[in-house]
Length: 176
Image (cartoon, rainbow, N blue to C red; front, side, top):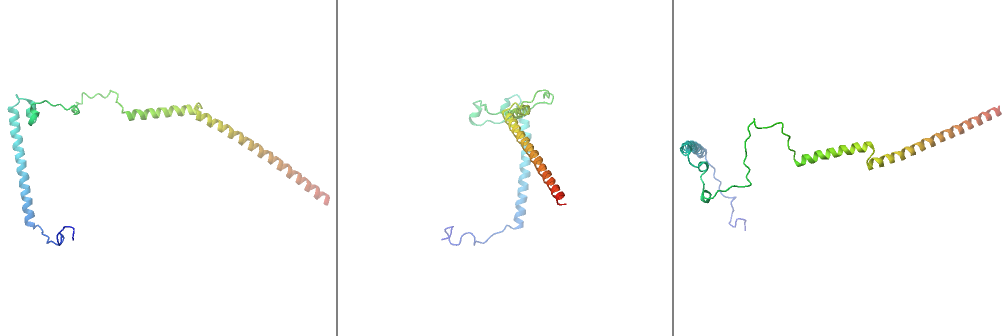
């Protein structure tokens, strides 16, 4: 049995299309409704201003919003609501030090600590710097020993070559 439970389903039905005249009529009706709403809103604004000027002596909260139900009987103040206070340009103090956030403070402290560590490291006062200097001294000794051995081998090779050349001369002289 097909999904719909009926024979045929929705796909085989005849489709109906909206005629262009109906679409134009709907658009005209929508435009008229919008203009009526705008005119009605403008008339309501004028009426509210007249009422507000007449009721200036009355309660200010009543003119702001009509209270519904128990709201008119009980004063409710939301402690979580923060009232935005607008500041004038003359009241803004530019000389006042800017308060940094926690993340900004931590980032600055981290940078200062890194700079202090690098100064101490360059001076050779940290454990890592001492270990690096010791390793460097060992490497210098090894290189000096390697250079000295190379020099000795070179001298020994030169002495052998000189002895071999002298022996060749002697051999060549003795053959003549």
